[in-house]
Structure formats: C-alpha cells, structure tokens
Image 1: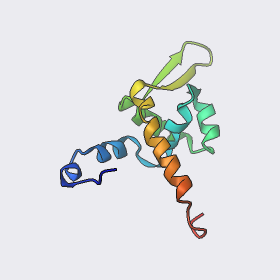
Image 2: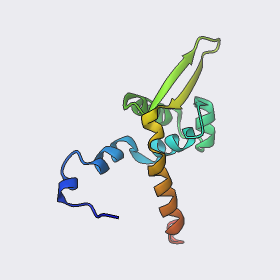
Image 3: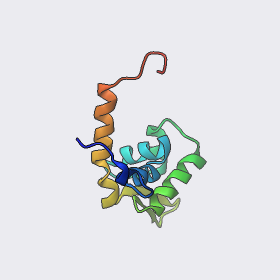
Image 4: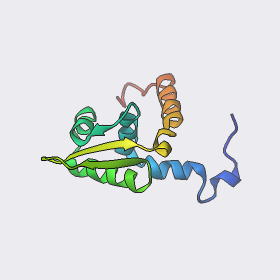
Amino acid sequence: METIGPEQRKSGCGVERTLQVLDGKWATLVVRELMPGPKRFTELRSVLGMPSAKTLTDRLRSLEHQGILTRTVHAEVPPRVVYELTGQGRSLNSVLMAMLAWGEENPAPAAVR
C-alpha cells in the first residue's frame, strides 16, 4: 500500500473528501446501518442507540445534501419516510470494510473502552 505523499495532502484530497462525508460518529454509523437496505427514521434511531432526534435529522440531511442517501416521503397518514443509500453512498462500503478490519486488528486499549 502506498503512503500519502505531498500531492495528496493538499486541499481537496480524497481523504478530506471522505472525512467531509463521514463527518463524525453518527454519519459513519448511519451509512453502515443503511448498507443492507432502506430504513425508516425510527428504525435508524433505534439501532444506533437512540441519538437525539435533532442530531440524527441533521446527519441525515447532510448525507442527503451530499448525495449519499435519498429521503423518500410516502403519502400516507401518518407520513412514512424512508432513507436509502444512493450508488455513491453504497460505494463507501469498501471504506467501512477497511475501518472494520482495522478496528478488529487493533482493538482499543482497556482504558479507552
């Protein structure tokens, strides 16, 4: 594997772009949870450990704005909203798999857990 050289460190490099999308814990975990398929807001909130509704809404809006997921509102009473990854969002699977492999190979020290 290559190391990151000066030409990749300049503004706008791929690492920065990835960090813009996977901005923080919740955005990354939302993408992870949507990999298997679409989910409703309450399903996402439940599997993520109940982040605040505002936090989750903010992350979902950001990911939608960046083209990572779609938000579909079904005209029902009450309205049903479904979130699903786009092709661009699904392309993050290899990034998440690399993070999974690294995390399993390098567990957190006991004091951090």
